[in-house]
Length: 317
Image (cartoon, rainbow, N blue to C red; front, side):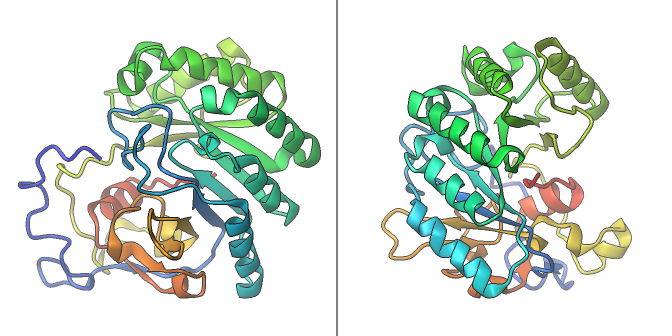
């Protein structure tokens, strides 16, 4: 995350886990209905985006590659804890840079879960071994597998503005390969630009129609538009009173239904985090097991307010 002016944004806020700057009780969220367990496959990525919230790049290995055996350990914990998880989701970095990506997805679907993989659909996914692996998963599990492809904007020039010249065309070729092989797709876009949501969805609809992609631009689960997570922008703290004022339920917030497992470079154990958005914030590390991660999450970060509560966004399908 590129913090443009951290000295002036949210001064005095988000310091106390339980109390806001003006002395009110900070809102918290219980793990009320676990539906998605995320795994970060590692922060290494084949590209370096201009506004990557996790600072993924070809050199950032702060989160190292997780293995299929480690994923199986947490799948065992899901069964032991009786979490009613529907979906196992993989994010990065670029997940297809992890050589065990196919094995991790297979292990998850063999346990009966749906699998979501977030990818830029570029060269790592298009390597022969990964394409063969994806075709095997499609043959064995069909609709249980979904790939969500990062298409920051439906216009090539704006997408490339974020991801580098030529990125759009490479991603498009990946999308076409997935289309031609009948692999279920979704798209994630960004709201960095001045388009209204209606204009954005209309633009994606035209893009999908042009290329014959079976993706619904008007379904937020199939075309996810993420608000920008800029820590230089002031946001309000979320108090317990906000639920009624905003007419929102804590059960609708992402950390009510998901957790994320990461493997920190040099750490002795894996860590379970409150959500996908805060991989580097120590206070959102809930322990090393799913049992420890069943604790409530205090909404003590600007992303909690802007992205989840006010923006209403979710990383899950």
